[in-house]
Image (cartoon, rainbow, N blue to C red; front, top):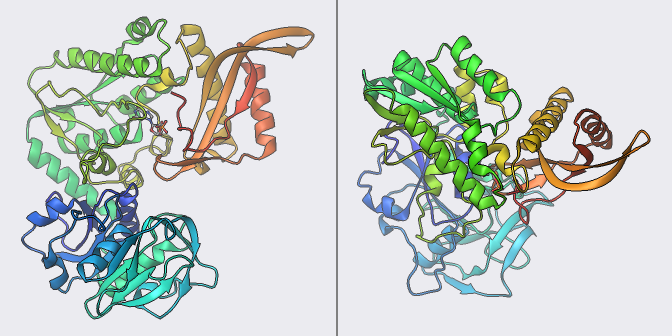
Length: 519
Ligand code: XMP
């Protein structure tokens, strides 16, 4: 088990749903510590002492086949409350003798109206006259297992919420963890506090001192190297480690030339002067631009930037003697995603490069102090470490940087144009109080020339694309609904101030079907 320090916890058994990590988030948002583990990990746990509840996630498996993913029967006999979600519900039904059928007729995707059949602790103050829940299933429970009763139904699935209150086993066919379910948090609140009777004890800000002590104990007098990008994750990791080991932390900033305007100098000065960290700045922009010359294929660009970054970082780190650890800002979702519960490989859309994904062959031990946390939790830690808001609440920025925001070839001139436009856009969002309402915003350059007119002259210049999305974790996203006057003024500002752009467009696609970045 990873996080031995937490006494009372909720264990989430991951059957491979895309949204399992949202379950952990919901539980933690309610002040309760939770961990996600695979069914295999669950088999290895001998002592259930600190486990106050199990949540069985959804997943792609089906209990209608001969072989299906399951859990040890023991968990049902320990008087520990259990909540099954989607596949989790079907599994419970199967184990207790219910009937599950795959059926085109019964399949439900999207919102469904919920009808209450009976009162239950699980749905206390949850169901209103117009409660809709988010469904995503093909199989459905068609016969109740023995000693279970029906709590609620939808039009197409009779057994949407079931319970065996004596054994404290509950199942919901819908996904209370996604925001599309009205008031879904209430289901977790009821499960945690009315059924599991667990105490609210998890507070991220109180983890800071424990983490610093752990780093001190692990690292001792040895040296740690860290790639600092100026994003939230690497910044919080660096501040934490610095609190523990001071000058034995060496931070390296590799300037690829693909960062936003002024960003690198700002971050460098901040960490060196305000936080007094041992930071070394490497200007590698020339070599990055040289290697990217005439490369327009998105995947090729990503590969070049990723491997060159590693090369430059490795070469620099060789200059320091006696380094034992490589620090990375790995987060909890990265850990969950890299360990598939089902063994299935989801199809690769883009090869992500992250300054966190550093070289394996460096033979350094990894130091990943944020690996237990979600991004919003890291921001709370950042605040308690005194990290400036500008970095702590910065939108996510991809490892390959502006390299994947210039469609086609990357040239110094295109970079100049994009940096100027992006700078104006982001500052305007901040000045108009919109930045914090948006999950991620950026400008991109479409190097397609179109005709315009400025004054009495014809122009023939590039298109600037503006993107702004709301999202919870970047896996899906909606475009942000700007007021018209903002769009009017930003278009004017960019065209009047950036030579090389004569047309501004706003991207109104969601993810899916688009992705957040263009490449
Ligand atoms: P997409 O474009 O896949 O992006 O919808 C989802 C989120 O991931 C970020 N992104 C990256 N982050 N290295 C990163 O660290 C990458 O290579 C990378 N590519 C995309 C993107 O900015 C968005 O927040």
